Length: 229
View (cartoon, rainbow, N blue to C red):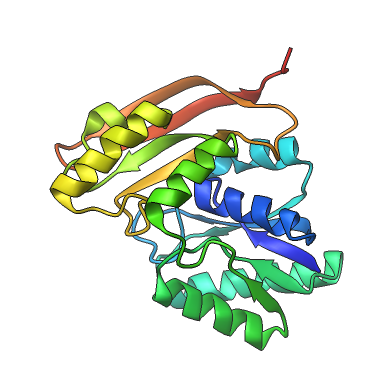
């Protein structure tokens, strides 16, 4: 099936593409909505402008739409605009959705797909958090934490690459503080720097962190694709 992928640059949307391709689907275009606010209920914000580098590395074209408002109605209209364009340019038959637990998000994306006569593919839906996070490492997905906003995760996590040792620490913190290990509840956001889909890894050249005592973000200021050699 010819698919478009809802793409934020984080681990879930990227891994959903990986699994869709494993299922022999063709992912022909990335759909990225760029909200100018942290308050979006559907979308992820940190470092989303650098998804253009990820798109280039994957060799998948990208359609981007900026969103000036956080109103759900505006988000839906912008997404429908992207879907209409993707159908016209790439003849897509369905959409890849990287959601895991959010029924609100899935129901809304399913409705949009239904209204546009498209299938919805959700390969991560209801995946076990522990096995999923381990699977990401086994599949050679490299990603950093780009924001945190829950008890148990402080500014020391910002910009950190998740490896086996850090995953064990996260599991211990999850048991103590009760957050979702896969960050599905918005406890943290992630950004993929390398994975099997990438022809070249993404190299962060400059960045800065912001921390208010509870919430924080790792903002990429400059990045490029790096030769593997």
